[in-house]
Length: 245
Length: 363
Ligand SMILES: Nc1ncnc2c1ncn2[C@@H]1O[C@H](COP(=O)(O)OP(=O)(O)OP(=O)(O)O)[C@@H](O)[C@H]1O
Ligand SMILES: [Mg+2]
Image (cartoon, rainbow over all chains, first blue to last red):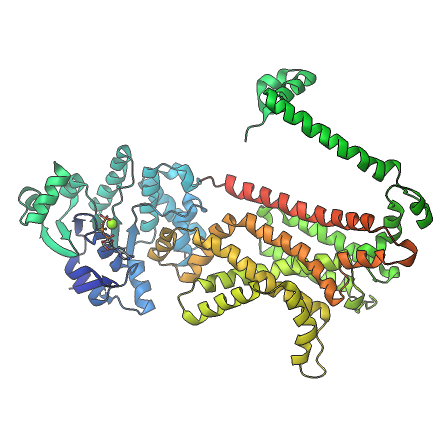
């Protein structure tokens, strides 16, 4: 079982009276790439955010790398150290340079020296092809560049799994590809990935499994070929009809 | 920022012509605006002439109180006579160099500290050293400096001390209150909300009164806390509540995503606050923060009701001198000018700071 990096067992979440996530069961193996899709409001973001405790689940269990996610702060820290996250709106720190954005957490959380952290950070910036922007501020970059910085920032913490919540939805169309290319590269390097995205090309290219959610439930779970060519449920057919038309 | 002198066209013009062009563009672009300009200029002239008459032509710069009474202009001689008293109160004349040195050093320290690039732990240490120097100079009682108790202090040093110490302590205290007000822990939150609302609900005068009249009643017999110190504490407690509300505005302006990004990276709550949220929030609220600081600088004059001799009180006392009665316009104008210089500098510095901190990281 040690190769299971994420396990959710009968997980439920409510916002007050509103039952957002219903009986979620999900297992992700090391190295697996999973794409989550579904209509707006179906609970995709909430599901992903429960994994690193940006949202709290009310019952059921979540394990990350064998550690159970509870209110124990030590467990939360362990899990957050293991999980990297990329947001739809980048959430870079506007008052810090790109390089400082990348080194902040390694220095303060992992207690690396500034030099060590900067060396690692420059490595990742090269990898996402923006090494020359290291001393600029986020406000001086384009959306696509910002999102690549955000990916590099998460990677600097050497996470075992990366969560993406619609990483390309806030981008102009011409910038989507540069971000997806980085994500494909990451997948090829063997990173475990959970991506909420509607980029079906990306899903076909890298996903091991596609998970379709609706109204807080996992409705369908299949490999991309089966899911796109032969969807089983009515709702997923309807959804695919809408986004592929 | 666009400056007309930067335009290469106008730069190549001779000065007079450039000036004419500027005036045409800025003062007389349309008939209606030309009319407004002319009306305003004539109004200014109309007010300026009587003021010049009063302040220069008919004024008594050197002379006695009687000379002043016979003249129709300003009695600058009064200011000359009372200059030392207004600025330094009852501080012993033979040691007058000490407050002068303290203020001189203070202004040097401020000047040195104004560059954000110099803000470091070292600067804080230098200020700590300076505070000891201030105490040594103003109070003495050690290293061969004659003791001058705080009830002899007055004028500008007193006003500067009350304001500066007030700002330095109320700012961090205000930040803590603002953080507490947003806390999820009900006891802390209730305390902070209660404190802020209570303090904002009473005038500073009442706090000063309590500090000078009521507070000593609660102390065990024999324990005496300096009146100046008590007034200083009252000012800090008062201004902190206002600072807290200013800071809260800044905190509210930071998007939730900034907290979430910090949490996802594994930073603790305090690290997120210190490294991500506060640096942004405090920068946003520089203008209202300085506004509050300016307000408090002037509010320190209220200490006159508990008989501390700040700048305004020394002026009022000078005006009561039987030999020099009737020159309150001169006295108040003079003290207003001093207040204005400090407040204006604070406002100007705030705009520069804001500009510098935002241009280096445009977003
Ligand atoms: N903080 C909150 N409080 C109350 N309800 C919320 C909150 N956050 C989300 N919701 C609700 O929970 C549901 C699921 O939201 P979620 O953001 O997970 O959906 P999503 O699938 O990511 O949608 P989208 O594709 O629009 O991002 C929505 O109906 C939303 O209105
Ligand atoms: Mg979402």
